[in-house]
Image 1 (spheres, rainbow, N blue to C red):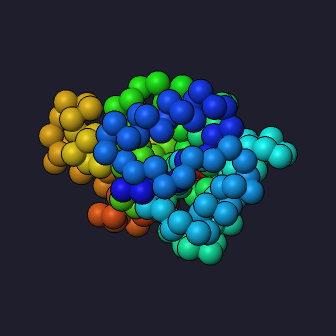
Image 2 (image 1 turned 90 degrees about the vertical axis):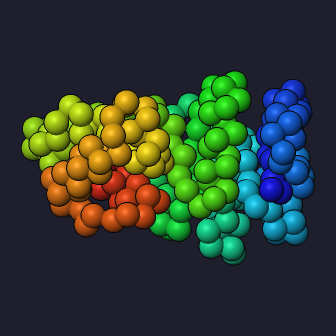
Length: 217
């Protein structure tokens, strides 16, 4: 699996290269600036891009915008964005086209090698990997009594949070130590209460839930 990596901090970039290579990834390019990232994504056609939000020369959202531009040129290009802090706007922009193959993680997650590598693989496969803190903030913002979210039971909210992170029913069942049938029932209840069409497509359902939770912000 070929990866384009963009990170301006040398030590972190080098560490990510070594980590990904140790898990069988091929590093097609490891760059440190927005222009270098744009060129690498256009020329190398990677299987997945792992991109720091803030890159030179602007140190604002250069990395994210390069990734979004590349996805417009190649719809569905898998992109995992890394950020120092939770920025819900970045998550919304990343999810906006609805094509899947996207992830948004805080840089702290990089230090959990298993979690980080799983996120890269999930995104490369066309799935979604959203940082739990992003999901928690979205849920908190939509938790008022006048919101449909308030009709969910505590267990359904727990399932929704894990589902929105990009986890499959099997993964949620394993995490909560229950059967897949129980999770399927919770999922159906969640979609019913939120007024969303039930779908077996994990990526579509996650994107739908996230879009709903963030609607009307």
